[in-house]
Length: 235
Ligand SMILES: Nc1ncnc2c1ncn2[C@@H]1O[C@H](COP(=O)(O)OP(=O)(O)OP(=O)(O)O)[C@@H](O)[C@H]1O
Ligand SMILES: [Mg+2]
Image 1 (tube, helix red, strand yellow):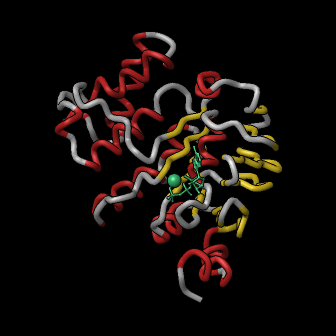
Image 2 (cartoon, protein in one colour; image 1 turned 30 degrees about the vertical axis):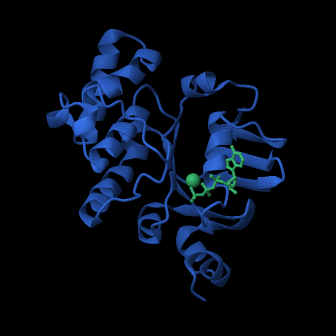
């Protein structure tokens, strides 16, 4: 469970998060809002890349603010970035293995975890292909595969569906719904695709210029006229 209390982030005159409160309790939670709403900033605070001026965040009851980004990874926090971080010169397998070097307990365990992650994201047959030859979907799968190494407890995905075509989105959807049970991790999913959010997220938080616009069961939130006006552009 991820808890956010009175969270405020300030960059000069900009407040990307302004006294934000909320608790992600469902196995898969959505985080939506227009461009610049503060979604990535919230992930940055949770993963330790941005220090808030006020407020607290916790994972399963443990306060995150005193912990470095590396310590947060050690306790099971994982994330992907909006711009994927696949190394072009390394194979698909080695891109995932590079993470295991930092996280997995033993070599044997690392090998098993890499195999399981590669298999899950469907990249086993592409294991020896260099990063530069992987398409967008495969690069996203590398990024998701990396989050599954070790013992993930919460996985934060920053627009994993952006730019994917319909059948790729369908495959992504099929994987996301399996993660909580198979890997024991809670998922927080940022995406602009309301259909994807509606079909996988049990509860959804809507941000609007750093403020909480709505939060609750996804269907209720997406049907809320306030959300539809502000975010979906319909009344
Ligand atoms: N390092 C930074 N320095 C200054 N301003 C920043 C910084 N990072 C983000 N911002 C500003 O904070 C606001 C929120 O940005 P953020 O990236 O969190 O939005 P977002 O909801 O992820 O948007 P998008 O859907 O476009 O990814 C924006 O106005 C952005 O310009
Ligand atoms: Mg963003």
